[in-house]
Length: 152
Image 1 (cartoon, rainbow, N blue to C red):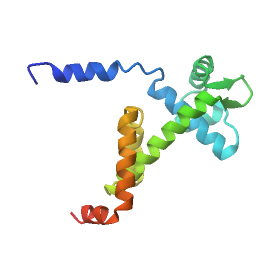
Image 2: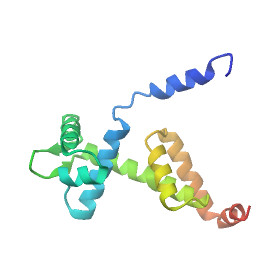
Image 3: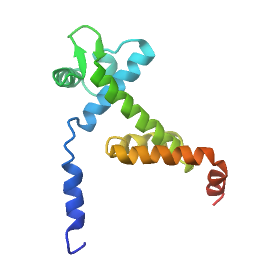
Image 4: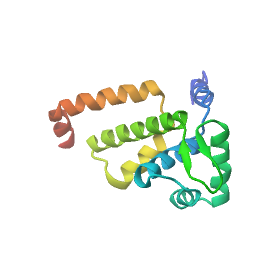
């Protein structure tokens, strides 16, 4: 452990980022967006099954997201993301896609890549994601680098 406590300071700074949404809330928005894209709507039961949580837990979270202005929720009716909720869900989906592409370039695919992307996507600084996107684009335009890395 370092004498100056820099590791502790970095942990404190990471937890004091001022984020308004928890990882769980972001997961709900992401799942709702995916369900709406697939089926045209999302229900409490769909979300409950997909996320493996109880229907009452889903209802409680939907109320919180509704109060935060991220979705429009009326019990026994469909769930619609607001512009604010859609923007966050799309941002998460883009982060996830960038991470999957990067992991694929590293040779990590399938379930491992998806689990790792889920674990990391909520915790990255937007600047980090932006730089990672640039790096992925650079690698994509220089396939020899990926080939060379793959042969290591």
